[in-house]
Image 1 (cartoon, rainbow, N blue to C red):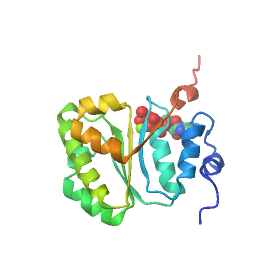
Image 2 (image 1 turned 135 degrees about the vertical axis):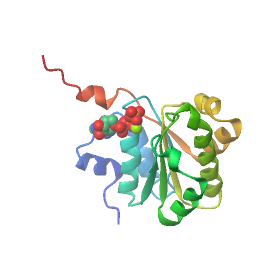
Image 3 (image 1 turned 60 degrees about the horizontal axis):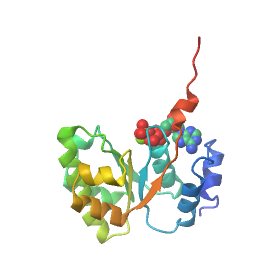
Length: 168
Ligand SMILES: Nc1ncnc2c1ncn2[C@@H]1O[C@H](COP(=O)(O)OP(=O)(O)OP(=O)(O)O)[C@@H](O)[C@H]1O
Ligand SMILES: [Mg+2]
């Protein structure tokens, strides 16, 4: 059983929970619902880390699509993955090479069709806001994705900048 709430869980790992308290509380309150989130925010705001932590906390198996492995993925993979894992994390949507944008869109469509008849999860992490999403892909993809996912927006500043240390 899950004993710790999400913020306690993150704190226990030494992670910061102040910057995005509302988002973390929302995730906690919806702990029994399907995991369907569109996590947006600028570079280094903790999107990828949050996506993974949600899965660890909920004890869900996930597979990650990234700009690096996108080229190798087929739509058939989506069906076989969902037979074996609970959540697909589509990491850094929009950061794929321009030549792979159409591919990313097709993968998204396949996933969203699958989710219509399932309680499996999808987490997208991205720098794209909803206007960008429509512009990058298509109205159809925009409509399906935004209709199926709850948008969580992470606040600035970047954790990476915070950790930057200059030795002179
Ligand atoms: N809540 C947090 N508390 C402390 N450190 C964090 C937290 N979230 C993220 N970090 C750290 O900040 C760095 C950036 O996090 P992450 O890679 O998740 O950001 P991102 O938003 O996915 O960035 P990008 O846009 O480049 O993909 C990582 O080193 C991560 O461990
Ligand atoms: Mg990331």
